[in-house]
Length: 479
Image (cartoon, rainbow, N blue to C red):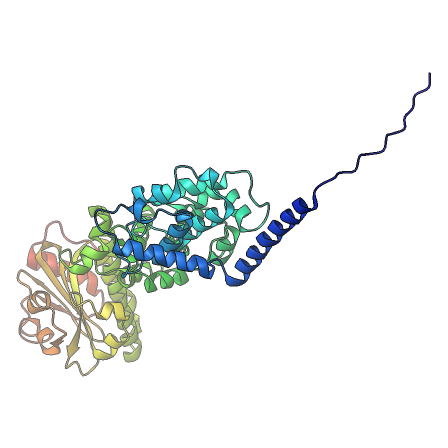
């Protein structure tokens, strides 16, 4: 059998030249428009004119004209997204309706999977630029539509779109910044994190991400560390973080709760940051307390932990001044017992409250955040030797007054020997109030004790004998 495997000649296609010319012209027009758009930016002059016309219709529409009627024209979605992108946060744009669920549904439609690439990019820009329920009340609707759009199959395999498609569940959510911050790997900088998730450097989303990143780092660093993070948070402490909670208050909450979880002992200079990020937790009726503490509803245990942190740090500043004064006088052998006694009073919860009256030189060396605490810090006038004084109200109705240099310790019971110190928030007090009358060596109504010999044991014995304190105070320094 013989098979003929030769092919017949193919018939030549006879397409009319007019059809080819028409198709070529259409392709050239499309290419020309795309090139012109690329040169002019995302909005051509014609588009800007149409957007301005829609803006004017919205500004002039009355109650009888609905939002849909005022914006009814071809390409309204792109025009409206551009208007919200430009005017959503402007104070002079009251004509633009709030981006609530009704408006969001009208602008975005019911399903983002049918969006083309341009619409998807516009919505993504709106999300990154105006992120937040305060600016976009229907943020959840916007997130849903964008998620649907990035689940579609016709997405680029590289570039920003590919990154957003890969991480869409983390990024496009009402808590997107928190999710990305928690996804940071060890030692990853904020810039590296933003680059990994293709987050634009401008806009509300990136600002929010920075806040979340800093707080997340604060939750993870070693206790008492993170001064660079804390400094950045201090500069932003007034920024709203959660409804009614500024960023500084959120940071104060983390410091307090982490310290409490670790046993309640404040490490490093974290107690200082309670004042720098917030305010003194010891004044419950103050405006500062309401702004920085009451807003996150701390428990009594958390408040007590914070108060003790600030108290102890303030006490430690006084001990530093005591250290310097004894070195200056050549009596440094007293320091261990005098500092140990003060710390023992605090460690055993003997002190209820105290106030420092500092020599101007010592006051100047105090951190600014402490200088402003009139309830616990003041200056002392007339102490020629440079003496600073601490007055302490203790349990069992006991008052203890100690000082730097060679100031002898005074212990009294009953009425406060210097009531104005706690009743008034003066900028300064005269030194004479702490060395005359009931505080003078010869006329002291309590115990006047120099720091000589076994002065601590003798002092506590005198307190038991003279004040009849039962059970007696038993000294044992806590290291």
